[in-house]
Length: 133
Image (cartoon, rainbow, N blue to C red; front, top):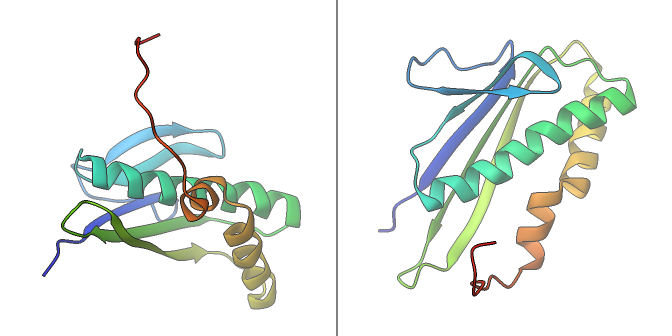
């Protein structure tokens, strides 16, 4: 059975109350974003997906007129024996007074435009540079 690498990023009214959650500044929220994730490569990959979705939820909500009091995005996934990803799934919780059809539209737009999930879905080459600069 393979290990699952789960992360949670949250902002606003849904920020993590966990004392070991990391808080980072965020342009869309005054108190920043909390991150619940160990510092491993697998967790960082999933944090990138969840963080991008969270950012884009705030950006697109602003554009679409959807009010967000809080956002929580949980991402998880695993890897096979050769460390190829077996896929990443994410789930979104929102604290919003907006109508359900507006929220569904927001979620659909973000799933379509979120840059990091799009890049992961498309695949990318990763190469080592010959110098560090």
